[in-house]
Image 1 (cartoon, rainbow, N blue to C red):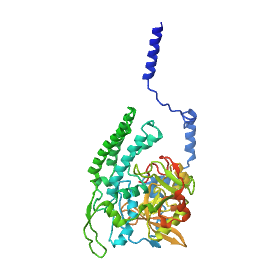
Image 2 (cartoon, rainbow, N blue to C red):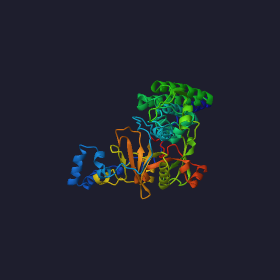
Image 3 (cartoon, rainbow, N blue to C red):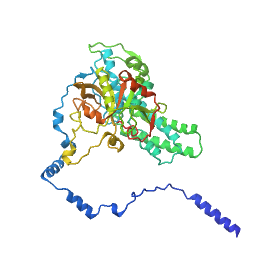
Length: 479
């Protein structure tokens, strides 16, 4: 009898062990479906009766049947009454660039910000740095960063918020100023003619999808190795094998970055410089030479502690480079420093929500230029804090301030160097109204020369750490 009971016990234990244990999701009250939550016939009838199709609404319906919403909501008075004159414009900022079908705005803006000083110093007709050169190393470094995160999170549940955040955007085009800074510091720079954009550089979807697939496979292998009890060194061997494939894909798509090159330039008066050999680092040091650590990052993030240092976990382009950090200040303080910079002929890199109140064909971002309320009779407005907190807009595009129109001592509008080519705006140049600045500009990069002492002191404060899914960055949100 005892042997039968013992055998039965062993059988039950074996059965329990064989059955996998799944994490259960527990809905909060009201989350599960109930009859009272549905749209009843009476509720639907009430909605029908709430709309009275007036002659004006019928005219709106007819217009919307044949036109895009955007074409009907742009306030043409604001477009036509905004001139393209500015009281101060930075001399020779360089020709308009085009990021095309990519999310490299942060990189274009970063490289473009450095051009005017070079053109002025060497009397150049024009000058553009290679975006593809930095792009190559950005993809390689970001791949390494993501795989190091995968090693760090190897025991994290597969669908935890951390893992979902990592896997969703394991590699992308997005970035921020600290990404550009780290790339230039480590890899230098080369002229665009040395490594110009090819198709994959300017149309990145297919390349990024391939890279993401290879990296996700490596994450699977890393987690399998961890489950077997293998060492960190063995997991890093998996990472190295994946990075070899990443490097191969990048070379085939973008070309291999030069380790040295020969280059010369033409001045405005037609003189050609001697042909010289450079390494990318030596070229940067000779022609640009600016210490990028002299730039300070500032954000206007309502809802977070003001005049505190904020830091975003994971928001870095390299595994061994610092996270994005910035001092949280008022929009007025950002405006004043940007004004001082531009007036001193120092371009200003900035990040904004380009989805808000803008007309791409005319190149104008102006408060109230998109008049959806009058067309639909619906109030869509949200303040800056709620816009961020409730995912209604993020700093998703980086550009450069190159001019300002000052009226009665106050900025009225800003001249903007964009990276969308010359077929939009005023031959590629855009205008931002100062009210739009206060509502939709979230980040500026300012040379220390133009930062007040009381703000400079804040960079030494202990940062408030924000999660990698924070809406302000949304895992490299600037596209």
